[in-house]
Amino acid sequence: MTYSQLNPGQCAAALVLLAIGIALMLIAQRRDWRPSLALAIYTALVLRLVMLAVAWRTQPYDLVNDFKTAGLDVLHHQDPILNTRQNGWGSLPVYAFVLAGALWTSVHLHISWLIIARIPAILSDLGVVVLVGVLARAAGERAALRRFQYACCPLAILVSGVHGQAEPFCLLFSLAAFAVILRAGPHISGRRAGAAGILFGLAIAAQTWPAVFGPALLLAVPTWRRRAQFTAGAAAILALLFVSLPLTVGTPVAKLPYIFTQFFETRPSFGTWGWGGLWLAVHPTKLPVWQDPLWLTAGSIGTKVAVVSALLAVWWWRRAHPLDVATATTTTLLAITPSFGTQYLLWQAPSAIARPARLSIALQIVLGVYAAMFYLPMQMLTHDNWMMANALMMLISLFVIALMIAALPWQRRHWRPPAATAPPGRGHHRRTGGPTPARGAPAGREDLRAAVPDIPRIDDQPEPGGAG
Image (cartoon, rainbow, N blue to C red; front, side, top):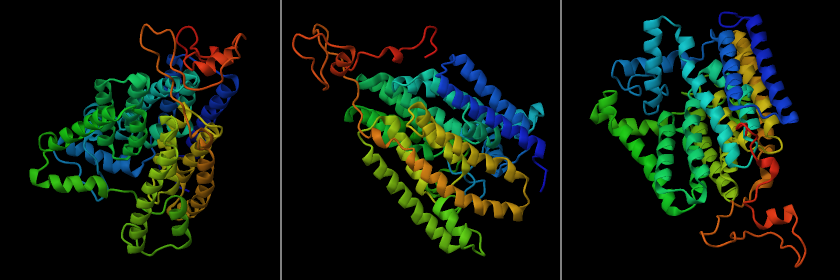
């Protein structure tokens, strides 16, 4: 054992904090809690800051090295991609600008980088809490309950408070794009579609993985014209950020083609999750996975298979609610990918919590416990003991993947969007199906709701005071 980053007392305190978050999620579900937005944000902030106070000395490799190097490069007007290790930084410098501000604050205010570098992730995650509520309300869910459950989600607490990764920042802009589209509904304007595209483009500029939400967002937009405007907005902001690299971070113009290729070259190491991890655990290699031709080939082929599988999931759920499409796409990609980081488990969490299926909340708890093993107790192990524990975690990951697949919204592959109201002057709604009451008989509330889907249920209404 080694206690250089985390001692047993700190580890126990962090695990107790996660247990409190899990308990709050379950009690809120059982008792149908609907706290105010302010209480949800305060709860999220306290849980994440306490986790930061307990585990701030842990040193995730990318946070300590790659993120700090990227921030330093921006401060020195240098391109982070050209001035880092292979696979160290492979995105446009949107989040690097944030890291540069954090590094400047660390240097001039004498605050540890391990603390200040995690603050942007924590603040971004507070924004995700708000957006989970917005999306839940747009999907007909109990907004106050769902945003409170995300605020207490152990996986989100770990990724922001311990890892300090860019995932919450990317999710913030991706979910904002969903919110613009879903709140506008079938009558979304071209301006809103373009604005959603810009938000989505910023998410992809921070890290390329949010592109996985693209199909769900396109399916959420009602017409091909609006989809073209959405795509144009995303492409425009990405193109602007790319061509401005010589001005913002001093990228040589001659290097721009090389920079473009790196957006598609960067990927995590093979063999830390699922089938790839199990294969590597039972057939270890003498060479590192980033050098061995076998693992390089397996990682390349496996990544392509995962992308194709995600596209098949899009096709299978193409008539589902856009949030269900997002959940299915991200889950399928995670289940099959050979290249993995623990923070990737957060990709499906906001959409799955905002519009949960039967096992969604249970899955978030299991994923939080699985991630906690990597972030907390395993940080105290020596290298040899860590390798033994890691091999066991690869086997456990297969059961986690099985639960992820079981928790998909299998029964919700067909969703009927709300009917648009008729033009002014017509005293009826456009019918979308449903039983017709018998002639001469009074229609019950359920019959009226079936015939006119725009009539909400009483329990769908927000509580007084905006509790959702």
